[in-house]
Figure 1 (spheres, rainbow, N blue to C red):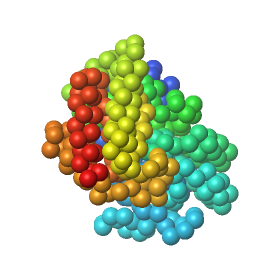
Figure 2: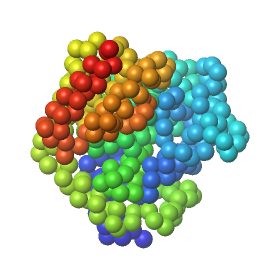
Figure 3: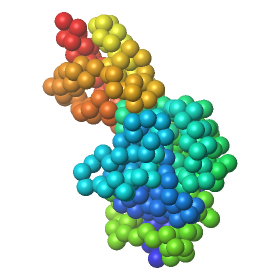
Length: 341
């Protein structure tokens, strides 16, 4: 049975995110992802799943897949220890390519259990999904009886109070949330429509359990966090600080003549050593990795720790003051200037 704390945080989450009519707490984003996939397969009675190149949904076997060699090919394992037989039902399509989605559903529509997506990708750096891309998958899932899983492990309560789904005005069948609901502590969740969630044991045949799921310390931290982020103007301030950071960095790079661009949504940001913002994995792969490494270590030497990979998004906290942002931009000017020599 759920503890009182679990019930309280579930009620708080469902009040903020109405698409999550029922919630199941777990301990990590990986657990949320593998459980959501299992639930989608159990609910639909189908095996095939669609994910997108460059999106990461945890390290469960079925999702550790790299793209095949061509359109509509099935994924090959991208980690040792994962049998090909486990990933043979996973299709990997291009991010922001609605035409591939159309083709996939035209060929396999009655076999697809779900589509899983980061509406704002964060594991190939920040890459925005297009409205057409998100709308296409929602329409096709509804038409063919597949479930749409929106992975908000990274975007949930960061890009907006009601998540990425609110910015795209899309209603997922299942939503995944990560450690942000624990204030950084080890707790995560997945949830969706009641008729889907009631397929989980003990009400239904889809098994999911975890001794440490919803542990009281993590849940207490989560409730404190969720209360704070609902304060009036919280996301206006967070978004303004993040925008101020990326615009300052972009201006500093431009002044030094370093090819660079940046983007942000809410408290999430991306830095790209590219002349323009990337639209998908292929664009991200064109980024100047040596330039990023020089920037990263130059900033680290000055006391600023950015994500240590050109493929990772960054995050601004409400605790980052004007003084912190100004100091970061000032030191970045020095680094960019040194890179231009």
